[in-house]
Image 1 (cartoon, rainbow, N blue to C red):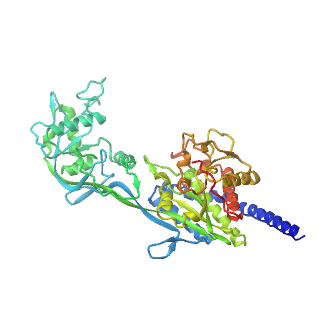
Image 2: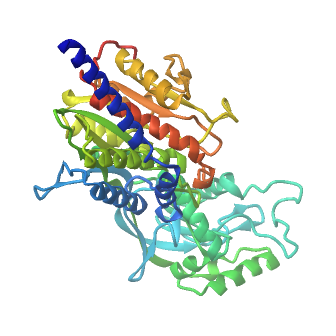
Image 3: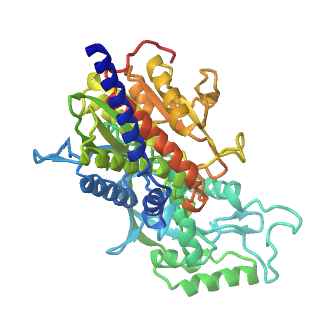
Length: 531
């Protein structure tokens, strides 16, 4: 009799818990997801590049949401307090101090001028600058005649002079000029080197507005070589041979202490007379510096902690990365799907659990909600957490449910929306995999696609999002993903293209899976190794 009563109470309790999970899962709505994502993926955040002002705005939004929910701040701060920010520095190879000084006036790098390549001039150099027209030396025309450039910097117009009809002076109309584009520039530099020149300034043929745009584009291109890392290098870069800069005509005029109109007149006279007028402008002096090194970039993971009840020392992590790729080629990449969708899913799941706790249905195990930084730079935020500062000991970490791109569909499933790729669920824990399957079948009933879970998958997605830093430490994981689409890492990844009904259901699936993991009697076992 007592045994029957006990079983009856146990079953009733289980059914009650299931009903409650559905109740709080229903608080996760497409409307609320859209509200969060409309801000996180807005132009005002400028693509949330790691360490950028836009990413800091996103961090402030996330941390405020955690605070409003009453989540605990557990990240140690420098003053001994606890906060939501797990701050740390990354180091980016770049220009620490760069300028051209004309008199006492410094010209702005990547605005007034820009380098041709990763130019490094560690110490300020005072240079005599000599105007050499177009920098051309050939039969019948010589911009270096009677001009001494030994040990000096040369300033020359880009390209080749043209006549009044717009035709090249030295090249036949049906032939490509030897003096334009990269090959032409290198040819001019070689000529200048033969005359002993040490530095090169190319006067752009574009107007001021176009030049500013080109400078911004060049900055974006060169920034791709400035990889972020955890440690600053102790080795300084050596000075570059043949340092070359592009300058606007206005800046070139300042460097040469003449009016811009004089340079325009010289262009016209060269076209008319078909002879060099380089000697018309006297040499001047400027100071140049382009110091490269590791520049510290402050960034942070954002953590919100919900304490459990009787099993509070065991912790389930729910993660997503809140950084994206920023501005590239002058265009904002908002990253609504990548990974605005995962970030806002974490916000909604946290809210659902906070509401459950406020209603007396708090989780047995604790939950750490974490939006990580630097994923786009090489999973750096999650690596910092696992390898350098695991605020929750890894031994106490039950599993990581990682959400990265769940708001769109890919070509393989179009037009079907009711699917999600699961990656990693079976690699360390057969129990986790079975729980995931059972929860989906009971509550969502989406197609669970394991295509990318195959170890032979050439995309290797298992190694390409933040869950991997937990998996490598033998912590079971599930990576939720809906596939790559045509706007991946492109400016078209915007809120308007998110499929919110689908997005809502996958977010609820993660919540329901987490609910089961935090409330079950036994911690899931690590019983396999399929990595």
